Image (cartoon, rainbow, N blue to C red; front, top):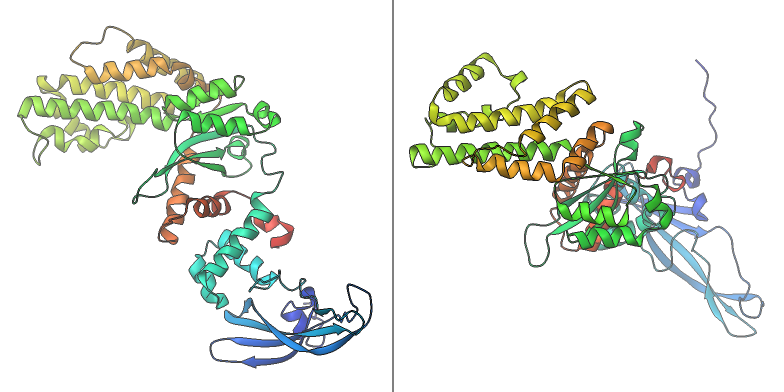
Length: 436
């Protein structure tokens, strides 16, 4: 084992003060915090107006919250000299901009530590503020400002984006005004197999106009680079894509296609339940008892579940439910098929079978058929571009829900968008030179 080489203890280096242009002159360890008395390393007694030499006129103390050492809040008390020019009577102080921004209450290291804690460690602002012994608003403002400067306003953030996903997201559930935003996700890393999806942007509102306006605001090079847009069944996103990205391929992801078929199955089951029993599903009703089994893939059914479905379908009055169930299972089987060309062929046949010849009684399948035939090109495009779906977009929505839970909700949409971009923007902050 190699013997380590030690040097003399250096409190300036240990506390990262040498990079701030400060020198420790004293320390005070309290039970609740540590206080380091400092002075500015480089003296600058020369007048910035006439160049004359200044005369010392006392000192003032600038108090800064520093990054916690051993999770003990640490404060810097910087003694700043004041000078007065003997020639022009100008008064000035020593420059402490290397240690902190003008009028800031956090040192530059404290700001970066807070940003790393929020972005990498996913800590709440309240927990970071407690570790710094600073107010919530002070830490929140510092994190949002630094995050926008270092990460969000990075000019290369939109480079290399070829596949995007678009979806809606509910950012709050109470209060007046719009509760929804449109989220745009970069799916390029997922498609290439090099990393997770990341949030590109979040725009207030959910409509064709919102997505179209966002696309129009991007550079021509960005729009020309987009090859695929994954989306749900909302026609507004499809129309905006066709108008702004005529060369891009729209892909309706499997999750929403299966969800449409599952909704049709549920609606058929509920309708037959009411028609045959005269009431909604209750405990003991065969259809109500099989509601979850009906949504289970046929290849995943256990023997008891298979027997339950056989008993349900044995009744003549349940034939419409069985017809809807078989369509649902064919759609699921198409997406689970290991061969993409074969899966595409299966789903194509299902869509064609729903085009005409459906009994009038099966209103749910007729409605499903109209939707699938209208979006057939988008649905089948998935099989030509495997791996392109809105699944990662839904995962981002889940992480945003976790963010809102950690923060106990948001009231300011601007702050929420910034925090969301920092939390799920995929900036790889560990590689960022300012966050190492």
